[in-house]
Image (cartoon, rainbow, N blue to C red; front, side):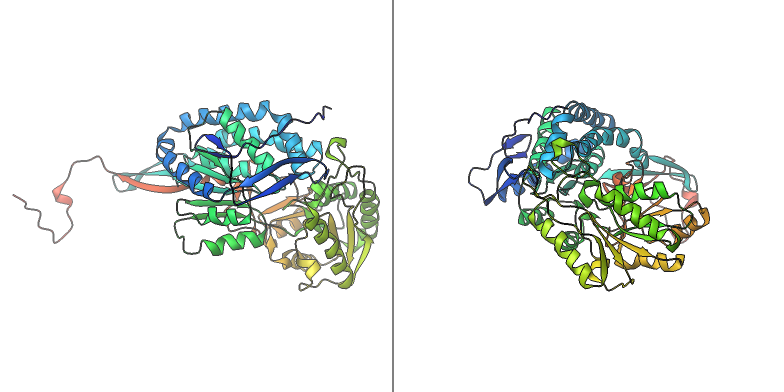
Length: 505
């Protein structure tokens, strides 16, 4: 496995088809790898006025891009796919350096970028295909067309800094929109590299733009008058703020993909080996930093002791380390995430939850934000418990016991979030019950909450989203359905409505 470091140098914001360095900016942040605090990936100055320039470039480029045929836009995206596929190694490494996730995890994400283009062009755009409705009115045909919206602001997260924004960008572009992308300030190098690949793919100037910046820059972008839609992935708190800041911007569509407090149910007839393995993957993959990660496991008392012991023994053996060592777990994203992770375990202990496995910071060869997994037993379900209802975004799992399926579903629905749920049982009737009772957008049967298909919708209910599921359905919120009635016949005066005098001679 080649772990030679690819060189990275700051190039600036990508505006109107070229990189524009910030010389005298409004601030600067350092992109330091959470996997090795001695690895300074690059320093990133930012300038808020670049947001104006990028939005103006996107607005100017929009009409000609939107007027291209679908096949013409496809040809640009296929060139981008070539760039994505031929730079997988470099992209994977940058993802790992920026996020601290292990190389296999970063490689999976890097390979998903080209695959997203394939799936969108061959599968998802069928959702916005033109549809002719014969006799929509008597002797008049109807047509349903989907037109682009305009300038889309894409605000990216840190945990999947390439794949998740790409999941908005590709549908937006193929539908005929232009894009201004602001990456997370935790992962600017990945964002810059995506822009480099767009540059190599030779998109028309202004169709795709990238602006780096802090939280204030994100606020300026989403509130910009030229922006017609905001495609966001991140926390509930930031998503709510975006909603509040654009309350009077009635013309903007918001697709808010937010957090989760996802539950797995292990019922009395579950395949124990599979339930343990899948729950480990759900809870601890990407160090628990997935919105679809498993943070609660509700186990039938018949299996609870065995499940908890096996889960604990396996969790203890998970390898943790630098991305180049290709361990199972890497790091949390920053010092604040470590502090929050530790603090929530103290909250769990205060709220009378038993600590089975204590999560702590690790001092490894590479100095970074490494932590161990943790497990707490919840002795009594409490919907008002801070620990039981808060998204921690770290490798912590709460284990409950319940032999009443209705009460179990009550626990599932208690947090206000509603992204994903998993059910391990051989009983299809229970699965069908869950389909009705679980307030979630993703419900998996005998499979972890983690790891979604781009051929399916991805979104949640409650605090997890605003009914704009992404993945397969993303093309829908990137377009507006337009209805047309088309009547090619000549005027027939005998069909005029009563009371109309049409003698115009």
